Length: 417
Image (cartoon, rainbow, N blue to C red; front, side, top):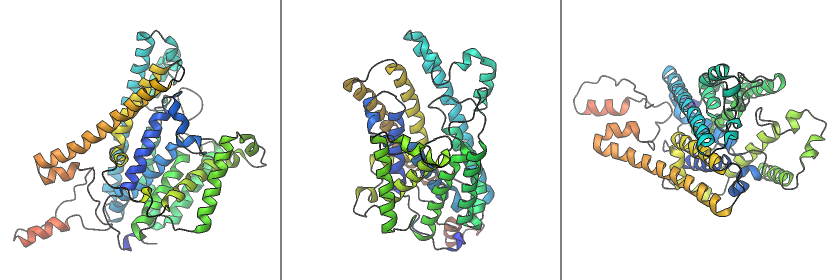
């Protein structure tokens, strides 16, 4: 199927993607402060998957717009370098967050007299094997707990050009190759090393790339025909039934029933590192249900002004700030029992600060546009519309210059990175 040959849909930003990214960011923040009362109400308590799967799926979906359309318009090198540049940014943010995690927990150990904090989130290796651990830290192979999803995402962006090349040959081919890699990773235990510790990454990119690829597939389907997934009543019923089974499994602690099934653990287990089949199916079921929500539902009528959409528009800085706040919350709550008032103050304050950052970034984008002019605004405006797939990025200004009697030279492509 030639995606570039299909008529493009509206190029406006889909605020539903930002909305769900914002929801995922809030749930990730709550889950990353263990022991608080509100973690009992996040998605992981109602099914096999959690906010991480949703976040990676949405990253793949958005990549179809951010990189895929540029790739299929013939600017393959630019799209590749744009994706790899983003991977580099993620690596730098990861190193910054890891360094801050070290500082936050070291401060907690000294200022609060809680030396046992240094045995948390993988910090003990810095004491027992400092040289080897620093090497692993610098190369992002030694990853601290709660600060380990960005390396996986960076690897996915490094893999993105290969996925786009496969998608250009056929979306089903891309999905088939991705599923094969997911299966091989599970069967042969393929996972980047967690040096200097044994084992591999908690978020195995060779497994999680399937969720990313599914998001990419749905994004391209949205681009080419306006529908990410077709509505089928029987599929809605099947997805709903599976979500109910997942909920009942958690609610009534029926995990042993799955283990008793005569199938490999990859088909009946709930491993997060290798994205076992029950987790994957639950992710797909949830996505299918909400993707086909009635057009009158609040999930289908999200606008730019929705506060969660505002969070999602600035996902990386909000995630980074949320990580710092959640790690600080862990230190504050360490060895303390849950209490409604303190948990409410801690969680609500953290979420409010993240909303404040997102609001500031929205304001800053508009302020630069007003002060520096339209061209600067286009470079920084996070809500700018994507060009239609296959559109000539120089046609608009070149045509205006020609109409004004100026030279008709083409404008050099300058990607908005």
